[in-house]
Image (cartoon, rainbow, N blue to C red; front, top):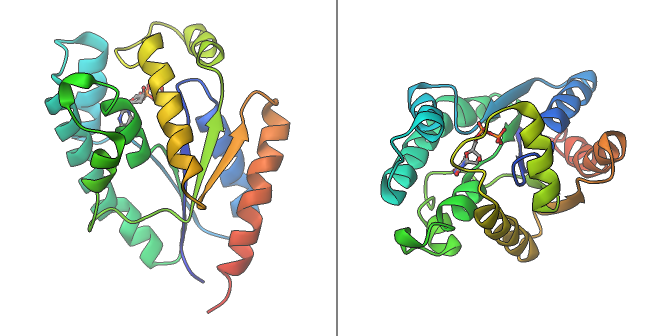
Length: 206
Ligand code: TYD
C-alpha cells in the first residue's frame, strides 16, 4: 500500500476542517490508516504563530514567513514523511500553498507566490492532491465571525488576494481540484470523495 498525501486549502471559513473530518471517516471506513494534520501545527512554533496573531505584538512579514517555514519543517520531518513511509493516508489542513497565498499577500515581504513556493524545493513533499475549497471571501468571513473574535489573518483585502492566488496556483496544476465550497456540506463532501476515491484505488497497487 502506498501512502497518499492530500491537502485542503481555502480562505478562512471555507469549511476545510469539517470536510477533512468527513473525509477522514470515509477513508478509515475504506480500511486505510489516516493521519490528520494541520498547519500551523499544535507544536511550539505553531502555537507561537497563533498566539502572536491573536494577541500581538504583530509579527513582521519576514518573521511570520520564517515561523511558518520552521513549523512546516518540523511537521514534514516529524509527521508527514514518517506517515507516508508506512503507507498511511495523510489528510492535512493547509500547506505551503497557504504560505504562498497569505505571506506573499504582504507587500513588505517582496516575494511573489512563486518565490514562496520555491522556498520549499528539495524538502517539502508535493501532495498527491490539493482540494481547494473555493468560496467568496465575504461568505467565508461571515462563517468565521460566527465562531468568535478574529485574528490578524482575517482582514478582507488580504483575503481577496489569498483567494486569487490560490485559484492561480490551482490553474496551473493538475494535482489541484477546485471545489465550490458554497454548495453545502453534503455536496462538497461528495465532490471531495469523487477526487479521492480513484487515488485510493490506485494506491492499493504495489
Ligand atoms: P487558524 O485560525 O488556526 O486556522 P483556520 O482559520 O484555517 O481555521 O489560523 C490559521 C491562519 O494562518 C489562517 O488564517 C491562514 C494562516 N496561514 C498563513 O498565513 N500561512 C501559512 O503558511 C499557513 C499554514 C496558515
